[in-house]
Length: 366
Ligand code: BGC
Ligand code: ZN
Image (cartoon, rainbow, N blue to C red; front, side, top):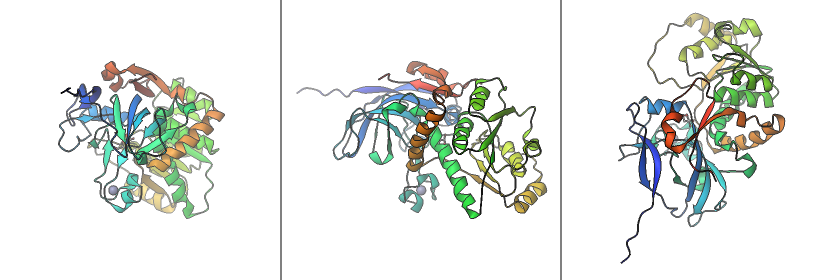
């Protein structure tokens, strides 16, 4: 009898909570079971969460596994579809969402990004293997089809979905009154800060970005081509921006520095809204001007809220906005891709350099 050889593939995995444990592993190539599709991964984006996982600060392996395949931002091509899969065929470009639902009412309503019980899994992050390998399988409910013209930068859809959700939520909250936002502040000029600036500029809002990079950096140049202003926080501390700018209607915090989050609160103008998106894995305590913050929040009807993850609705909005923004600023998204690293050099991709905006790990060229 002929022996069937299981095909194997390469992937990058960590031992969660163990610093510097990223390594290449060999795993069986999954097969497209009924109701799922097999994806060939083309490229994977690296973000701060991946770096934190590799620093041993975050992440959890799937039940019964002592390792976690990382990667949660991937552009892939459908290789094969299992029985009963409708709407996708081999060759289609796909970006899959990150979170998988538990049995809470929000997850069951398709909003696992608003999970109530916290037992969700996140591919490549928490309790489920990710996309940093040659293949993975997924169900259509979590697959977002990408128009072929978006191939060069569609890998940015997952981070874009994060700011789609954050801004959608802010605008939704502001339906509590008549709100005509004119001026926004973005704290941080990493991928999240820049992607949010793009969405705000598409809405015609005046945007001021404050971050650590020098103003002649690539970040600064990209932001000014979007018509946003860019200032270095060393010269323009967060605690002075309200005085500098006047009424601020919306602030996005995307530095991941928890003290900046508190500094930002009293900078909001009347009726303003502050959205926190930066994750801080540490345990740091700071002293805050509690009376001032409390008074400001109350007297100005201000809102501060946190936003995490994104369900597929926000990925779909992102596909729309990719197209709109490319019409307005051709080539804008490709400018954010500052480094492409071959699969075997995954270690170099996980090391963050100050000049990086987006680093991609190239897995297949097709
Ligand atoms: C991912 C989100 C995820 C969050 C927390 C982020 O890097 O983009 O999808 O929910 O980390 O794990
Ligand atoms: Zn849930």
